[in-house]
Image 1 (cartoon, chains in turn cyan, brown):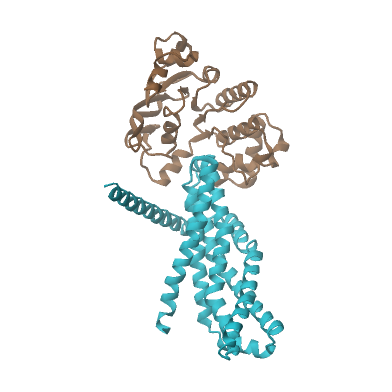
Image 2 (cartoon, helix red, strand yellow):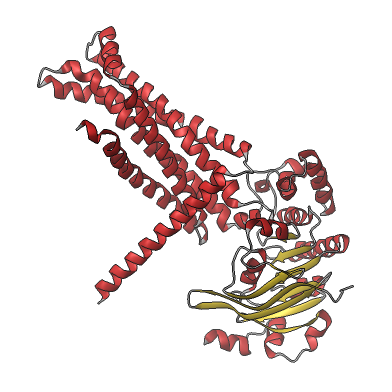
Length: 259
Length: 257
């Protein structure tokens, strides 16, 4: 009996949370496309997400590219296919590692910060204060973050792609002895526009997920410092899991036809 | 002097969180120009009552009117129109950390499309009105003491010259001297603006100083209401126990139950 009760409680809890997130998303998107807009806040969030995340995303990308070149060289050497290193690096970085690693790093940095900031505003009644001052909290707090997340992640990932490919090039040329012009030619010839575009679309979706989870958990946090801490953890964990889930779903959508 | 016209009316309001009923057929009537103080212990529904008035919470049943207009379940545009009449001093001041003092005070004005320069000018007047020096305008809330934050919160509450001002525990967390200064400022600002006010507090010194009338809330209902001068002579045991701070009496018994 208790087992059935647990299943029922979990199911209702899950459905309630899914419903709340859906309503939250719909409300936020509606406010994101309807005036008034807050350009200063949108710009501030864009700088926070795009500019200040660049070092951590860049470092992650360069090391990912370097490791990828090293590992694929070791593996391909067994089949005398070392020449495919550049191809593997560019494909992996643009399609997968660029958007996913950038998404996970930004989730840890920005998702956590959004949840903490909005959560603190919630528990200190600043969100209620916005309402009394004729300002819709969704329009002022959530919509600018959504816009910034959706637009800045693709830019960030595009830069990460270049840095990641550069990392692979450095290891390929200086550690593995590839001819620089051959390596670059292989990279250029094998890369297709859709590889990059699909990664950028993924990045935009991940930007949406990160800001949604950060804002949602922050907005509904309660119970003081402990509640804000919990909201921060939930924002990062849920965004990270959703990024990996949606990465699979989007990859299936984009590339299933290729076999 | 209080007029007879009703400014705020809460009639048979019920608000519950799951099985826990917070406001139970709650009734409150505040006249235009009146300073009403609602007293009561912790957890009796004072803040919930205020949040229902502000539109942050929606009651399950009952009516809330401001100037005769229903404010329950209204759209955001109508709510904005109602909120334009309101000012609010929050318990912890609820100042926006990322904005300077003057930006905090001017926030409601700029949200209502007042030009930034004009909003700043009004903010500086209100900052002076609550006894703060102009230099403080460019500082951030994190640099202020608790009393100064309350003053800035008060300046923000009166910035748009609202018809109604709500004060949520205005002296909580302040030392007695600063508490008295805040009480004086509230009385002064209310006289200057002519606003109708509703204060919730458990500080009887504050209640006596600010209020024209006092009402006591207990278990989600108003159990006594009357002119401030009458409270000491009222024969309600709950009220007498509360205002005299006694541990023995019906309130304690109810808590034990």
